[in-house]
Image 1 (cartoon, rainbow, N blue to C red):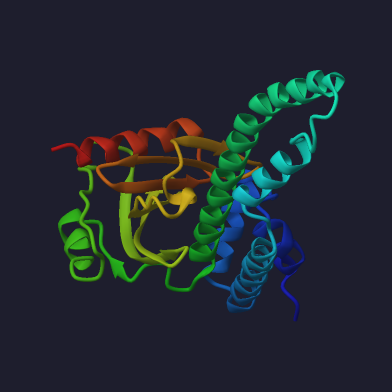
Image 2 (tube, rainbow, N blue to C red):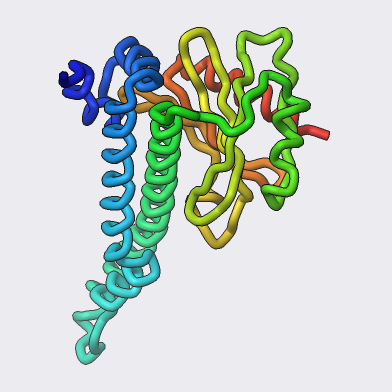
Length: 250
């Protein structure tokens, strides 16, 4: 018998379900192996398609070389050609920084979308965490020896958040920690990776993204890159981020 939720798998994977249905769907995935498998297969296909698209995407340096080669004056035989060339050079002075900013912004937004996919995949998993505990003194030591860095977890006793556990995560071939928190009926993922200069998506400026279902916030601190993603109110998501920032301070 076909589960009636299966017709909404594509909407769930694309984060297009209303917030109430998203929460119900997430609970359903924990009890329906068929829907959980369907969600995971769709996410894998989505990530594979994104990876193939990135393979044939021209690099920012290549884009700039093309723009400069198109805009560069071929010859300066006549004085009348100088003014158009100067005008084009002035335009390039405006276009190149704008292009660089847009490329950086696009990479940042793509990274946030991929992080949201990792969060959805976790919620669709039958075993969302590898270490199950509400005690930060149990969860944090579990990562020792598994990651090339350490991090601190906040004290949640007087907050509305509850720690559910953690698991290892991988993003752009970088190992990191994924921590799962609960806020009422909402589940929030916190991803922590090393802040890498060779990967713009892991060294981009702090940013916040809100789509139809998920809010995502990211920042860097002390050589680490934090991502917080969930379907709760953006204000609540930011509050959890502030708790993490306070815990990271010496």
